[in-house]
Image 1 (spheres, rainbow, N blue to C red):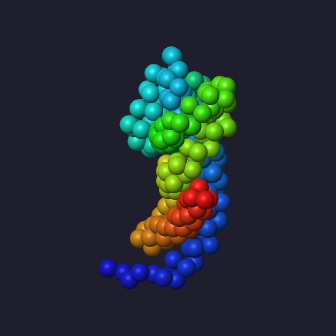
Image 2 (image 1 turned 90 degrees about the vertical axis):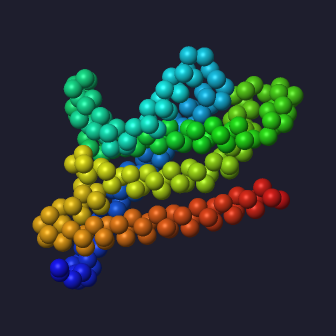
Image 3 (image 1 turned 90 degrees about the horizontal axis):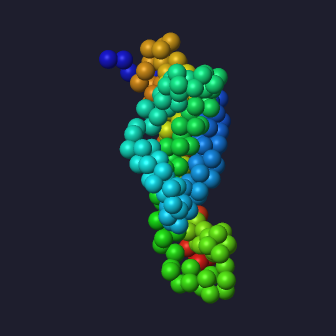
Length: 224
């Protein structure tokens, strides 16, 4: 059994870090799109809008109940068979779309719980001053729900960053894909995959520290 080649790992660090912006970029784009979609889905669930609510429940059930990898394959390999226009989709676009829909389903439930967690008196107060449901949600309820849901949403972003590692199965050369290629050329699989694991770990720990600081600031602001 060969010893751990630290020199190889150190030389591989700058190679893998070149792909970190792509990894973070895919996660950031998917997070923005997923958050927008999740807000819409959560509002539909909370207001129990006719016709739309059952469709949203089906959407959430499907994307929470099936593996992310299967969803990515459906987007990239399956949809072009049914809709030829999707044949032009790139691996990066398919990865962002898959991450968006997958995590929007989880985030929608987090937001729904947060909205329902806002004290009922807040709703009653908005009705008393003549606000519509839409105005109440936009001006009063959603800002309070955002504070409640913030830790869960940041956890989703952390999971999303880790989820980008599956993009290499669609031919995207991000950090995991780069590690796979380097390992295949050097046969140093353990070192390459250990290093990419450490990089993901450092990134997620940095975000977790940011999450803790944000929670402290939010709780301090609302404690006044």
